[in-house]
Amino acid sequence: MKGTLINAPEIAYLNSVRMYSHSATGRMRLAIYDNDPTTRTLLWQSGPIANTAQNDWIVAQISDGAPPSLRLDPGSYWLAWQVDTTVNAPSYSNGSANSGFWIPRSFDYFCPAMTVAQSTITAENWSVCLDYTAATATPSLTPTPSLTETPSLTPSLTPTETPTPTASDTLTPSPSASETPTSSPTATDALTPTPTPTEKPNGWIIQ
Image (cartoon, rainbow, N blue to C red; front, side):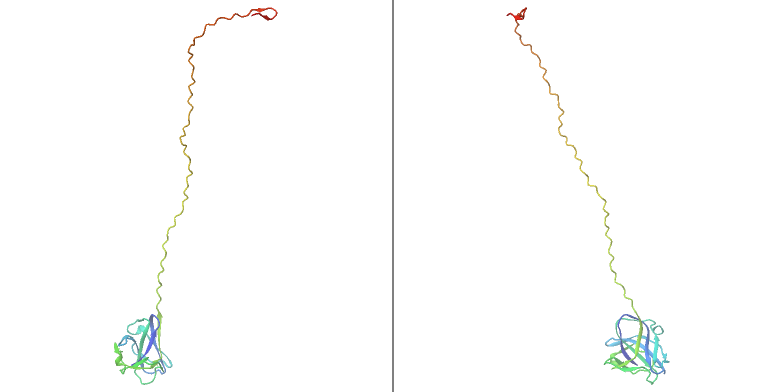
């Protein structure tokens, strides 16, 4: 069994796993392990696949394996493979240090877990591919501002102050009492009649 390090750049719902083959020979099994630093746990594995790919990709559908669906969070994983032939069918290139491993094992189901101590770390990189559907980001909820009710302005009539007449003392003229003089009888001196001059003829007045 051999494996190569792969990276998931985002949350991925896997559709298929692919491996390039130069020779349509034998059968192949594919698997995915996590990258725990001490014990790598099996996440998914295919059944045996007849290799009919000549210089082409061998495709293993996730739904045909166990479990039938797989989600990967962003991070590093190991894609492992087995073949039941000695023909160099898988496509290989030399990679960076610690990017591959191998464990002596017969062609069979993958082990549910393997310790790092069990494997030999290599720089072998194998041509593999993950076909996945990216998770749709859940939009963050922008709070909808609650509508503050703007009161409609009802025009309030400012009352024009009608002056209330102050009771000014309107003097209704009271008729001033005209003093009706009460004539007190004054003692009148008895007039002595002055003798009327006797008119003499020819306009003379004789006193």
